[in-house]
Image (cartoon, rainbow, N blue to C red; front, side, top):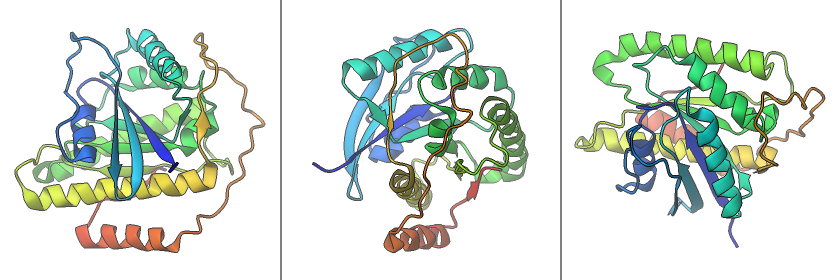
Length: 256
């Protein structure tokens, strides 16, 4: 059976996660859900460019609901015997530059099920709603948010000078341009690069298992953690990534 790549999509309320998932499927599958609606985990399968994908989407988290939300997600994954993940996709709306406490608390909970290096080496960050007409303002916001995330990751994971950490890619996408074929083609290409990079990270780090679910503070069990990192050997994939970035002028940069 072909490998199924399991993507866990998370982010605060209003980040555009469900709409992004619809872009991955290239049709409306996921419904955007306000905070007041039923909090359920949506899991759908699709095949894209030869990759079997399983997308896990959940209503955006808030500071006060994060623990119960994440507990429900992880238990549901266990119940469905989905015992591994391949990509954490953190979705962020760059218009909101002040939600570090929500994100920090949620990542703390994730680190009680996955080790920090497992989490970070399987992480992608995507900024939605990146309107071209507001490029300069949003660039400043993105820089501020990345700085906030850097502080969170350094505090929780200690990412500086750690040879076992692969810095995640940062992607920018405009999920509102539904009627502009040129932009839709560009941002579908951005998603393709995201998935190609995910496949590469799988080759390097492998999948990660969902461990026993424990909530009650950050579990400091990884001080001596070592992951064997290897170079990806698929030259065709690397060439396709480069071609897509060049053809569509895709904005992707490494976290720093």
